[in-house]
Image 1: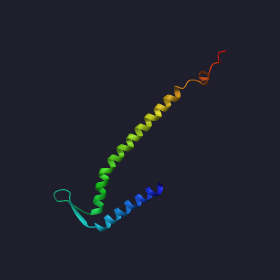
Image 2: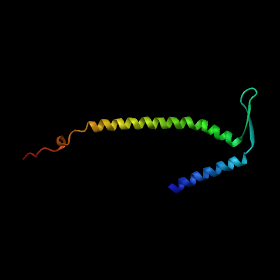
Image 3: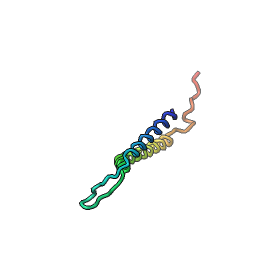
Image 4: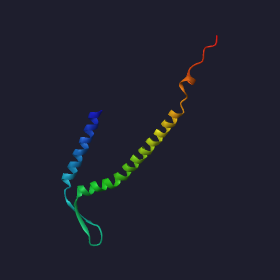
Length: 95
């Protein structure tokens, strides 16, 4: 399974490099009325990808952090509520 995962990411990396090489053309961005920025197309696509991906990733990490804190609080609560070992032993059988 690890081999397939590695193969997938290598394939994705090769496709990204091919896209970048084939589209390495300058693009002019009109930022404000008289301010222009010139960048390469693959960099523009990469920045656009980060703008869309980063907030989603940060929200996922925050949710995982919150769930982990809740789980740890529940575990602490459960450990404090465990009855002593003596109370859990079976009484003598009735004859």
